[in-house]
Amino acid sequence: MTTTASAHPNIALIKYWGKRQIGGNIPATPSLSITLDTLTSVTSITNAAKDELLLNGERSDDAKVFDYLTLLRTEFDVPPMHIDSSNNFPTAAGLASSASGFAALTTAINHHCELGMSKAQRSDYARQASGSAARSIFGGFVGLNEPDWIAEPLLDAELWPMQVVIAVTDTRQKSISSTEGMTRSAETSAFYREWVNTTRDDFKAAQTAVADRNFPKLASLAENSCLKMHAVMTTSVPAMLYWRPATLGCIEAIRQLQADGVEVFFTIDAGPQIKAVCEPAFAAQVANVLTKVPGVLSTTTVGLGSGARIVDG
Ligand code: PMV
Image (cartoon, rainbow, N blue to C red; front, side, top):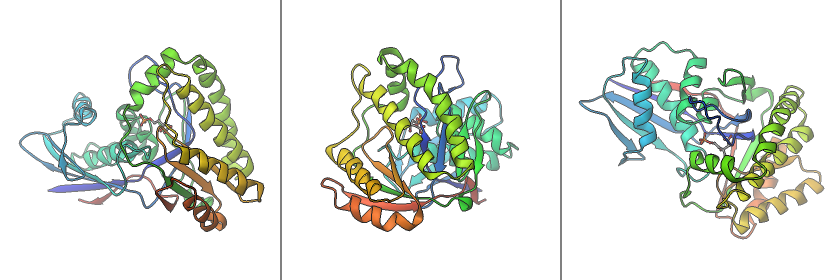
């Protein structure tokens, strides 16, 4: 018997960057995200003689996945399994494949092994594999905050249907994992403490902006959170410089669109891609402008999507 689950990546508007040193992969900052549609991780599991992992059709020994199985087995009866996981978008290039991958894997295992986990429990476990995965359990606008660090849905996708234009500027895999990067920032960036302190207020303000559907407010908070996170990354030692010239070209193009009255803002994760979040009426114009920025390889426009779910089994 095979069980298949799917999940979408999410993009943080208020970023998570940094962990508490207390185990359980507890973030140092709250975060607020939007779950996307179209981009999808599909994960199938079947019982097997021993654990095996296929990632995008190729045998993988990804320690994060095997460590996660070990963690689940400390609590649950999870037999050896064959895992087949594929993404319809580039892996590990700043498009959060770990978020959708672990949300789909947790959802598939829960159903396959009849673990009886609620969405909140799945979010709690998924977070322990990848902080952002906790958020992909839910759709639409999602918050991840203290004290329990279990994601919560804030607003359904249908109630504020944003569009996201993703401009890809480089498809190579990133050379440093987010866990390593976060540790480096905590240990070396002079701005790290302020980043953690100010993000708590940013999260609360963004929660209000989402509840009020206040685009200019959310835009300003999201761009500032992104730039603060990148300020911490670039002031870490050695510096983590994720941007390409085209990333900055896109920021300038978005600034111009904003000056022309277009409701759009940018965000960038631990990679060179830029995500332009906009009201649907402006999506075609934003995509048209970003496609023409020198160095942009492609653009994809997606909407907001639903949480992780079983698709077969
Ligand atoms: O969950 P991780 O370990 O993939 O880290 C996510 C870090 C960022 O994508 C840069 C920010 C975020 O909140 O998603």
